[in-house]
Amino acid sequence: MSFALELKDLRKSFGKTEIIRGISLAIPAGERVGIIGPNGAGKSTLFNLISGRFEPSSGEVLLDGQRLNGKKPFEINRLGLSRSFQVTNIFPKLSVFENLRCGVLWSLGYRYTFLRFLADLKDANDRTDELMEMVRLDKKRDILAMNLTYAEQRALEIGITISGGAKVILLDEPTAGMSKSETGRFIKLIKDVTVGKTLLTVEHDMGVVFGLADKIAVVVYGELLAYDTPEAVRANIQVQEAYLGSVVAAAQAGSH
Image (cartoon, rainbow, N blue to C red; front, side, top):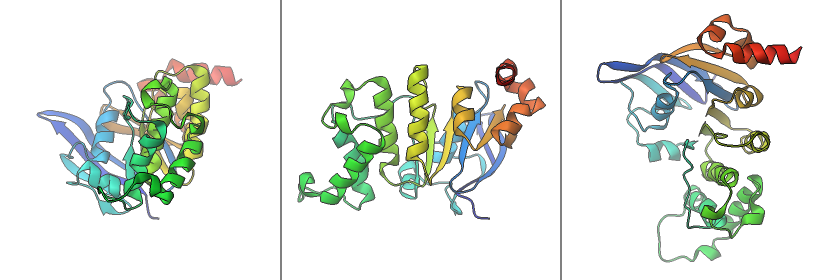
């Protein structure tokens, strides 16, 4: 079987402190994986290693079989991996349309030039219109990003993340700071826009993780404690003791 993303004995140390301690993971194309674990478990460090912000101390990261070690984040993005961040990362003084079109242009082969008028680039503008509809922001087309609600800004960021046509998407706490109703709508949006793509998401909200993921990877103290279906992870005694505890017990009680 070929895998969209592989981690092979991945390790990362800062000085004498080992943060990621030999994680191996193989994710098939099209699978949605939630990464959970207590604070300080190494989840964000793992994302930074995969996306090229950090260089591994040892081990490998493979995207469609191609080794990513040593590549810069923009090079990894051009190979088909894109990520969002915990803090919303958009262009606040550009409109929704302009934000999305920035991501679309490069994916369609347009480079920096003063010889073209952006309004004349029909393929880029059509693709941008499609993205606006996908992230439910078509009615906010000309609104400056800074004037959107928080949830709308997060939706815009996901639109920018997928605008380049990446096959592997990393979302870092995409629903953080949202109300329960916003979170429910956002889970559906994420499912819709990542159809056919491989998704990794770090989330603290267990409802989001169990509602979104096909598989869950549990990271504790820089090691992979479990990697299985949501049902199997929920029933895993080691996971309950190490992390989920009363959260799982409450969820099980509520299901009966």
